[in-house]
Length: 193
Image (tube, rainbow, N blue to C red; front, side, top):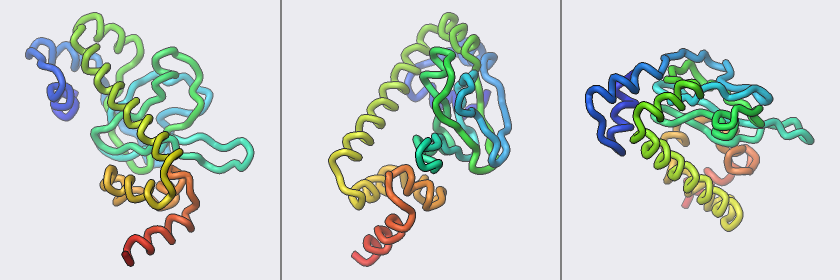
């Protein structure tokens, strides 16, 4: 296990050296190459993945248009998993694909449950992570329903400046629910003002 994830955990809960050692035994390093899938639609999400290096897109294919619809974009220090599929061990509704060569730490569902039994305070860590994630989703839904495309883009740039710098325009457009052409026009308008 890397100090990167341990540092993130220790921002929220205190760990003893023994607990750090216990936690570490449950996580495995994995390299994911560009365009390789971390998860495919219809498969069970067997691992919760914490990104050490690289970036991912989670998407579904619209059955009517065949186009990708971005569910989330993720970079270092973020998670890339299908929470419902992982928690319930059911088929995933979306794909997660590496946008560049990436390194992740993964924990299986069995190991996850064992870790929580062995170190109960990790429940608090994951509860807080989940609360933050749900809050982000709520804000995204509210923004999507109550603001125009320009404001959504400005909010995205403000909140996710690193994503804005690293992600291709077509992925950002899909994430925002607009076309790449419209995003290009928005960016030109924002630069002029």
